Image (cartoon, rainbow, N blue to C red; front, side, top):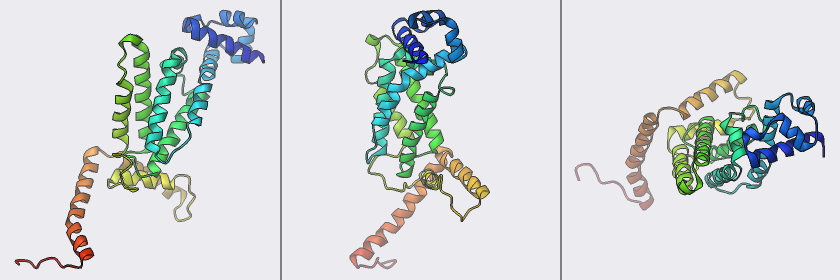
Length: 265
């Protein structure tokens, strides 16, 4: 085992069993059977060590998240991902608080990978035409909600925790960012859903029909439409429904081979 791995393991054990305050350079080096200067040589300083320890603790979580795989229902995949996130946080509260309670995720490769995995999952929802807003906004909303729920549960004594809190928050978030369920059409009726679906379809595709500047401008427009105020999207959906209502009688009559009654008949 390398010196780095020995130090990380020693620090992880101190964190898990004795808490954040127990992870000092002196205590870690003593537990690993090394001299304190080794920590500074390998990690720069104590904060560098703590960043590495947080990532070390997230290894298993990231492996489990990748192992979840994908099903035909990307929204249900998000449910499973949320539940795994909460389960990890409650089973390893010291590591979770070190990562998210101290805002280390943006500097941590493990934290960045966790968000990247979430983004890929939400992008699949967008590809299916079941996202109500831009992918970036949906990622921020779901990530912030999930972290908030876990930190709140960690701060609550186990015997006082609401066992249904996580599921209630999860479903509220999913209702906010996605359409109503698997029965929705592949391309949703709302303007926001159409904009998101087109944005994700075009993402990463190098089409010669548009210049790079035009692709960037189109992406900006689609994101703005996707994140437009809810009342604008609702008005568009109402207009869509009204248009369908007006055409449905004619469609049925055409299928039945009948003609609509003449005016005044």
